[in-house]
Amino acid sequence: MNTVETEVATLAGGCFWCLEAVYDQVQGVLHVESGYAGGAVPHPTYEQVCTGRTGHAEVVQVTFDPALISFRDVLEIFFEIHDPTTLNRQGADVGTQYRSAIFYHSPEQKAVAEEVIAALTAARRWPDPIVTEVKPLAAFYAAEAYHQEYYQNHPAQPYCRAVIAPKLAKFQKHFVAQLK
Image (cartoon, rainbow, N blue to C red):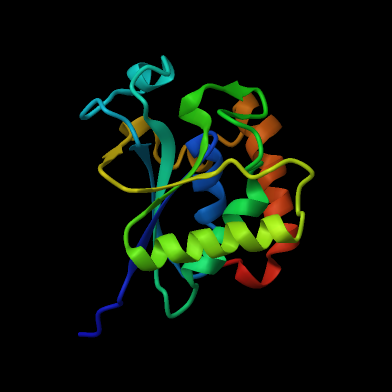
């Protein structure tokens, strides 16, 4: 039996529902799980994270096949689908739980993240500086079951229509070659 070598990326870019919906459509992505990382409270609940007092960010863990998509490509999508220049917010979502962060799993991921940020900064992709944190992943806690595949299960929900659907449309337009 052939086994697929996989890699995991843990990314925070605002609401985890948005990131999960996009990465679910990326060729080479095998699994996406919404959760929490970067905080001090073990096994936090959504309600605790929403207070902004646990230190956690809403994140997605993206399990991918590096033979089909590189970590650099995963990050290029990440930087296209959120605003990495707004500190502790994405659109109307405000608080440290909505910060932009890359929680790396290896020194190689750290180096690639720093290279991508440096290249985007040098290219002046945005008028404001990138504030994305690059930190080692200490722990990942899966979000409650009702958060998993939220967009897929609730596409008509107002937040999904107003916020997630436009992000998906933008992703689909810019990354046609990476669609499943």
